[in-house]
Length: 130
Image (cartoon, rainbow, N blue to C red):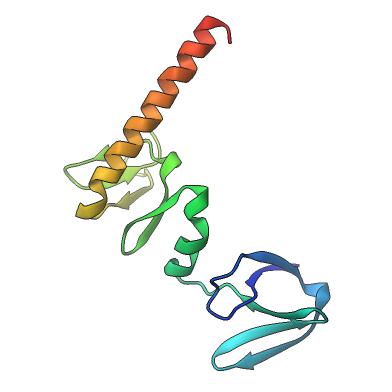
C-alpha cells in the first residue's frame, strides 16, 4: 500500500508515494499524523481543496469557484447562462458538471477557444497526411 505524502506538515513540498512497508512507526502530533521511516518523517496529504490546488496546477487543474477544482482540458462545453461547465457533449440530464464563479468565466471561455483551435490544427494535420 502507498500513501501520498510530503516532507512538511503543511503539504507545501513535492508529493511522493510512501510505501507502507518503509514505515517504522506512525505518530500523532499537533493534530497531524506523521509517518516515520529510517530516512525521515512524512506527512499525509490533507484532504483539503487548497492543498490539492497547489499540487495539481501543473496537471491542468484550476479552481473555478470556492468548491470546485476542475481539469480544464476535460471541459467539453460551457453554459454561460447558468455558469456551469460540462465534461461531455451532448449534455444530458445526468451529465457531470461544475459551477464557475463570475471571476473565472473569462478563463473558461479562453481555455475552450484554445482547445477548439488545437483540435482544428490536429484535424488539418491529419488531413494533410502528417
